[in-house]
Amino acid sequence: MLKDITLGQYYQTESVIHRLDPRVKLIGTIAYILSLFLINKIQGYIVAILFLALVIRLSKVPFKFMVKGMKAILFLLLLTVAFNLFLTPGEVLVQIWKLTITKEGLKLAVLMAVRLTFLIIGSSVMTLTTTPNHLTDGMEKLMKPLRKIRVPVHEIAMMMSIALRFIPILMEETDKIMKAQIARGADFESGNLIKKAKALIPLLVPLFISAFRRANDLAMAMEARCYRGGEYRTKMKPLLYQRADRISYLVILIYLILCFGLGR
Amino acid sequence: MGIVKAVQLAFEYIRRDEEGNVEGITRAIDGVNLEIEEGQFIAVLGHNGSGKSTLAKHINALLHPTEGTVYVEGMDVREADKVWEIRQRAGMVFQNPDNQIIGQVVEEDVGFGPENLGVETKTIWERVEESLRAVGMYEFRKHSPNKLSGGQKQRVSIAGVIAMHPKCIILDEPTAMLDPNGRKEVIRAAKALNQVEGITIILITHYMEEVIHADYVYVMDQGKVVMKGKPKEIFSRVEELRKLRLDVPQVTQLAHELRKEGLDIPEGILTKEELVEAVKKIK
Image (cartoon, rainbow over all chains, first blue to last red; front, side, top):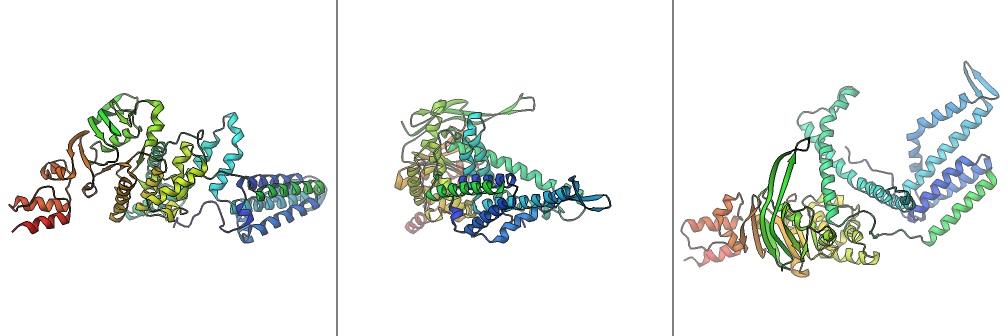
């Protein structure tokens, strides 16, 4: 039952976007999100839409996967739209009972809806085309300057990749413990929410104990293989910019110029 | 001096209560002396709690001796600045295959050790390839470790150690969690490394069948080395082994029983073939 949960939403296929350096994708996504919130004219949004459409096309990921991400935030989206719609003061367009819709409110609500939709789809493109591992690598390299102010960048990245490695193992373990407890008469299915939550205790306690034991073993195994933090380490798969990456940076720059030139 | 030498080694686990007062002291290793020559295949036998794993962790400088010391290639494990060099020379493979694989892809895991040693990128790739070939896992280099069988995972772990170019590999009950097939795979890989690459192997185990091909066997009980010798010598002392709660291989057991019944069969028979030969000679 727990087997089909996958972490992240990486979509395996061969495309230009998939092969790009994760740093390019990270910076590109951040730039794109910033641009969405800084432009305010319709022309700007047309540029943003065209740019996104181009990237999606190049990524070869079916569009329905992009929209999947939307479901999760649908509620948030509706809430934001509603707040903007009803609570913005200004020229009154419609009034139903105590709720008023103003012209400014309508404009703001549409703007918010558009921004959020693009934001989600834009960042989905990144997570769909980059493996979590690759993404971690990219973040580590990008955040390297933060080491100067004592942010443990390497350690954070290492923790993330270990977590990713252990998720399937702990899933399997959860499944095993669950079956073992069901065999002894535990009931995870029936009852109200509180009862169900309580039923999880015999599942979580052994899982935590085992996770700590694993952590201990793994720490020892890492030490035995001479792991001593990031300082002397070299990389087996170092991130190096290729031609495609440089071109992509240029494309992002052109996009930003167009966006701000037309959209502000 | 041999590649690994233990001198009067002792280690105590100290149990403390919540306030940090000493509750009890367990002497896990108690005055162990041993010397291992380079290129040998050594087995350390003992039932659970005999101190064999604790001994293994000392050779890799993972534990600090309470008394005495261990020398690895002449380096004292008590010296803090030698720790990394010692760990590179004496690699270690642990019991649980899942808890020692760090990479999400086989080749990345094998590269983990060399990365830590600061080896150049190009050389890492060469080492990864040669190590995976040495344990016969090269075709699986792009696989996720989660999809491999137990025996395959342990072979990946061994490759991860080989990639660090050690002189000696300590295998701490590498087969305890595997099925019979996986056990065979791992032991075969260890033997090949010993014979082809000349790497010193220290195999810690409680399976007797894995010991019969070793050059030298140490038997441990309650933190002490209680028997040592060639496998043949050890296995001719069936009654003593039984007292230590260790089972001898079935063939040896059978030979021993037959001998007790008055048949003319020598002690210390280790393989089926030997027994067949011995039985044929009786007329």
